[in-house]
Picture 1 (tube, one colour):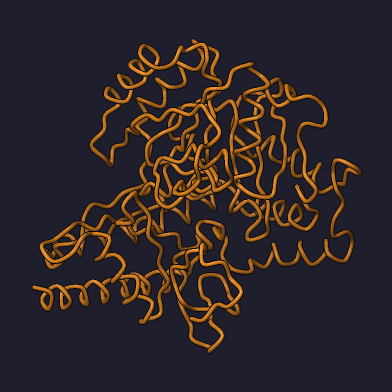
Picture 2: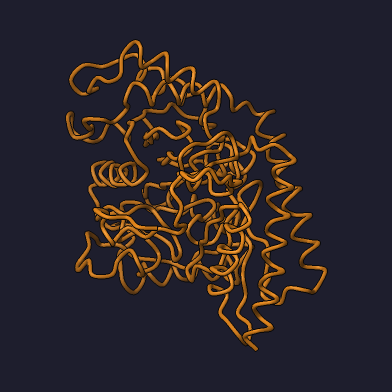
Length: 423
């Protein structure tokens, strides 16, 4: 696909130009139809053009498209903040700042943590991803491609191993790594915050170990450290609940949300304990487009649609379809490159293993191409880009879910043919 005038630094996975979409289907400029298992990389949990969201956005455009909240507040921003105070399942009063993107939410959370604690150091995790802006870059748990050629990044930032039921790192090992960090490299009283994803997205759809999550919460309470949970990708129903931290039995001090909050319109937020969110001097938080009125109208419609019962039904249906398909492929023994199923709920990844003829990443890239040719769009993840991530809309029709999984099976068969030719 020819893309003149576009920076070559923008990596593009699929050389197709999308013209329109409807729930879990999209069509390119040539009219070819695809099933969308990417969902804007987790943005479209309610699919392309959810009717209630469309109606709310259209109505808002006719009334007020934008007001810069720091200059003149508008009702949409106020209503979203009020709704989040009940939509986010925590036991304490919340205060909110709306932003344009998850990375911007992350940067502002760092400002809040610094102002509230008077400290600077941040602890993050291997494999994590928190954005592409300069401070967020240093939090990311891998170098390529995000940190290459970037020079010295804002810090200080320290990384720990990320313990998960889906990798080989235990809660004990991660706890020992923290103990080593604060005894060898960094006084614990210098740590402003610890930031972690309850389910890693870019890292390969790895759920955080619940035992370690509770250890983190206790360490933060003991040492006055702000615990930031990044639910930009895992939030808004992806795991079957509003937010994945509910599965861990802990509450964050600050919560980062975004992606599916407004069903495709640019919106994200930092929400957290009132005392923390009020620690930054007046005027220290804000942004020209943050909390745009049309995006806020969409977010209110999203939260109306995401009832607990509906999320549970969507997750159960999609999770069961994925698990049954993976189990069938795995038990067949036909696909030597097929590895473990990762993740929770409807946030699932499939690991691709190295074989004698190719790496797991090479197998996955071949599968993405084969699936696209058959009408299915897929996305990689993982530190080596060897984990297939499945982000179909929660609202996908069951027959489309089955069709998409069938295409993955056909693409796996094409890998077998490719494997034979390579060997």
